[in-house]
Length: 165
Image (cartoon, rainbow, N blue to C red):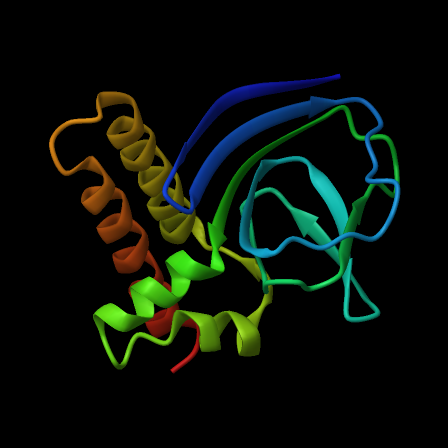
């Protein structure tokens, strides 16, 4: 069983939170023509890409480059897993990069995709980001799209500083 807890979309950005219970596997390798930011709140999954296998546990962030072939499966039947997923279209990422000549998000995803176990502070920061994005999507106050984009850019600037220079 799966339950979509939250879903919103605007101009090249999708935000989703989903809880899956029971045995769920993707039935084959697949890819997205978007950049995927996958955060596992709880549970465990096995993630495969580049002919490598990663055991992903709650509190881990997975960055998937555009058109990167991957699959997510269970080793065992864990009862539940809770995930947050953001998809960013290529056009949106290149738009972000045009805002600053030094940002280079497209290049960063291409060179540094993978699994990132987050420490407690980083986990709180990601959950805070999700909460702020959800609030902006829901309120749709003046310039909410600009706030969503700014939140995402700021998060990844901090992430790149901490994880790769």
